[in-house]
Amino acid sequence: MNSEYKICTKCVMDTTDPDIEFDDQGVCNYCRQYDAFVKNLPDRQVRETELDKIINEIKEWGKGKEYDCILGLSGGVDSSFVAYKAKEFGLRPLVVHFDSGWNSEIAVKNIENIVVKLGFDLHTFVVDWEEMKDLQLAYLKASVVNADVPQDYAFSTILYKTAAEKGIRYFLSGYNFQTEFILPPKWVYNPRDLRNILSIHKAYGRSPLKRYPSIGLFKELYFTYLKIKRIDLLYYLDYNKNEAMKVLGEKVGWRYYGGKHYESIWTRFFQGYYLPTKFNIDKRKAHLSSLIVSGQITRDEALEELKSDPYPPELLESDKEFVMKKLGISREEFEEIMGAPVRDHSEFGSYWLVIKTARYLKALVSGLTRIIHKP
Image: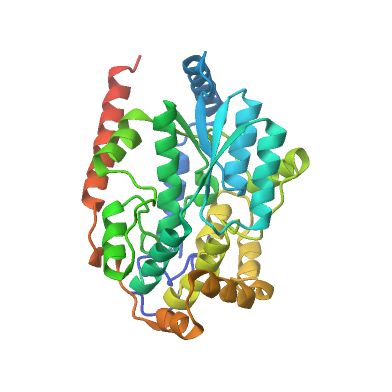
């Protein structure tokens, strides 16, 4: 644990992350990791050539089929831009949305505009609210850092289940290194760990999860690592967040919602209030630092933004009241939850070792395949 406050001289990551390290110039380990990543990144022309091959592969596979790929749409900028580019590339995705009960009005309108104007079919899965409420309350009572897991796990599960049911092999992801590279491990927890979810719910939940979307571990590993091919589309592009928002606004009437992942009211509350208040974690530092190292904003611009409150002041009290009412808890119960001692996800059951092993084996097989097929 760092004994004194220090901030990176290149980005805005600081010692609120207990694992941060600095070199002699005061540059943090995350900036160095990004520089190493970019050093080995194929240039734009190579990535575009590779993307052309992938697009042609998807189209060839999809001939005669209703859809050639699947993509998840939250109404946020990343997934919305992936949908826009999919249309531009001539792909025919089935668009899937997970309604967790926390959609903002802006997100709902963004989704509507995108599917209508791009001419895509939309499959919306509406969660059983009583079960979702019970699970989210269990996470709050557990006092673990990633209280966004119930929403994240269900969304990705619906994507893989729908792809499996429809026989779709390709999944277009909105993940991108340009805006998401930097994120301290202590600030998150793997949202695909079903055993951790069930363990936390067993400790603090009240009712059984009968309709909450889930998938068995081995079936998940099969679909995730062998059957369904995930394509991080934005990896192959010179993705710029502000330019993407401008294009989306002009072409499909898309509107910004005020912060990274703030298209969900729950995530806005989780990142803007829960994490800073209970864990002293301001995820804006990671998000802004990613934008700094990818050259999309300056460090001075990021520092200026960090001077403002992490939660839009005009929304804080109304959102707190909304969250308490929606979860069915009193202010006294809410304050008790916020004041409870912090616990680590590792204190509950976990599949994490199995998941890490599967990822390692996938990377190993992928590496061997590249060697075998190297011209």
